[in-house]
Structure formats: structure tokens, C-alpha cells
Image 1 (cartoon, helix red, strand yellow):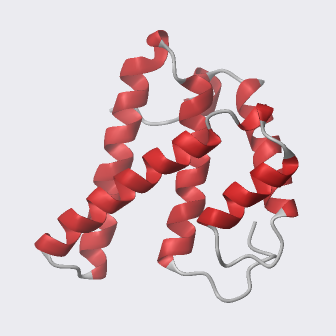
Image 2 (image 1 turned 180 degrees about the horizontal axis):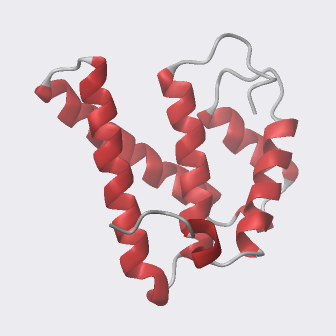
Length: 135
């Protein structure tokens, strides 16, 4: 994933990669049966993200703004990747390039996320979260 970066990645770059993964995860597994577990996962992820931002040393006021920005970014990514399987290669590259502006070439990342999406489709949610501590 990182081989086509133009420069050293940052926290923001890594977060975007994570949110791209999470958006595909949510898109594939979103249905009535998974609603509660996906909400729990969503809540946990954003709690952990907030803790990470606090550890970096941002102020409370700054944290609230950043969290709102990150949540909005996730929803923007979900909206743009929702119909991924029906998008042209050019559109997929455009989406990846829009969110990851540190790339020299979008092709490998488009291929990576296509394989990731297919892996999600070919496995159940329980398969993906097995071994996760439920306590």
C-alpha cells in the first residue's frame, strides 16, 4: 500500500488508509443482522481514534473539531466507494487519488482495494472479527 507514496506518510495518510478500509468493511457488511455489531465496532474505532489524538497532545477543543472532520471524512469515503463494483477503473483511480493525494500511481491501490473488497465479500462478518475480544 505504501510503495507508491511520493513522500513519507503522515498520521493523516495512515488514517485515510484506515478509513478507506473501514468504509469497504461497512459497505460490505451493512445489513439489518449486522447493525448492532457494526455500531459497536464503529463506536470502538472512534473512541480509540480520539484517544490516539489525545496522546498526540491536541487540546480538547481541537479534538472535537478533528473528530467531527474524521467522521465526515469517513462518510464522504463511504459515499464515494458505495458502488465500487460498478465504477470504471478511471473513476476508481479518481476516488483513490482524491483521498490519497500522496500517491505517484493509483493503479496498485485500486487493485489492492478491489482484492480487499472481494475478500470481505467472500467471508462472513464473524470470520472477519473472530478472535476479537468481546469483553
